[in-house]
Structure formats: C-alpha cells, structure tokens
Image 1 (cartoon, one colour):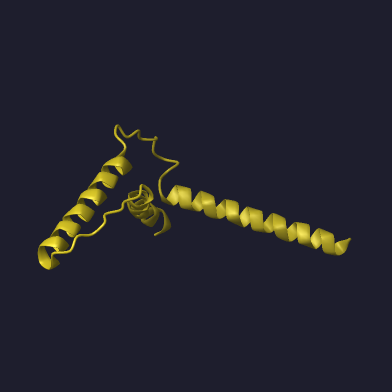
Image 2 (spheres, rainbow, N blue to C red; image 1 turned 180 degrees about the horizontal axis):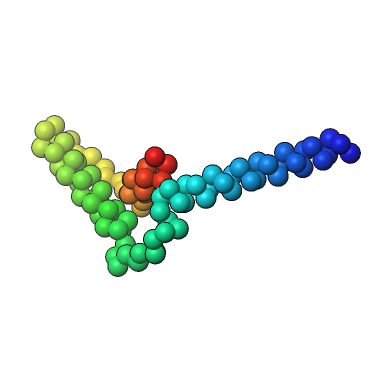
Length: 93
C-alpha cells in the first residue's frame, strides 16, 4: 500500500514538473502575452518550391560540370522542419 502511494506521488510530482516546464517555455516565448498572428499564405508551400528550385539548379550545375544528370526529389516535410527550427530555437533558448 505504501509503495503504491509513493509511486502515485512520484507520478504526480513528475506531472507538475512537466506542467511548470511547459508554462515557463510558453511565457519565455511570449506566447501567452501576444495575440495569435494569422499568416496569409502558406510559407511551407513557398519554401517547398524554393527547395525544388535549389535542387534543380544543383542538378543543372552538376550536369554542366560532369555531363551527367541527376534525379531531383523533394518532399514537403523538409522545408517544414527547416522553417520551424528557428521558432523552436527562440522557445528553447
């Protein structure tokens, strides 16, 4: 019985610590103090096109240098991760 109570108390303390950490991160990022901002266009879609253009230009440069072509493959998650990394940096630092 005592062991069960100690485990429940430990879980409760852990949940409180996680909640405090989340609140500290949100306040530190001023998310609670500023209103939400709506973006008019999808930035990730535009960044996907930018990544595709960079891949095409790199393939054309390689073809001009070596005479061999390359296959260009882009995904939607790469620009999403690269665009959100700066936001995470402001929250965590």
